[in-house]
Length: 126
Image (tube, rainbow, N blue to C red):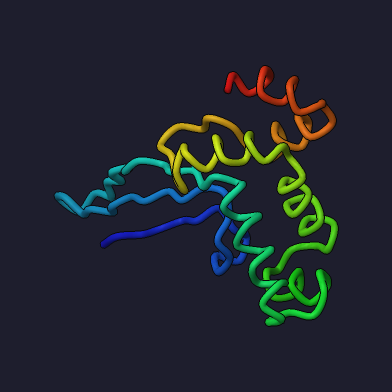
């Protein structure tokens, strides 16, 4: 049997990581075989949410937050990541939509937002 846990309390939202594992019964004993944990690039999440707002599918950040099952503040925090320097965003997008080990997280990027563009690049080693 295969089980997937995607890091969401109600298991319906796409969150920052996904953990896959197999559950095997051998000799009437439960054996859990872990697969790899993958992390989603927060820039891609922010871009996805921005597209949902721009398309008119959701009229406000509040409506989008209700759909996603998160707070309005969380939506604003994620969308603010798109205020990073455009070159920084391009470099972060080059990493890909998902990665196997946590290279950077949304909280790290939020801290980098406070820096000027040149220091943003230095802080993220870009």
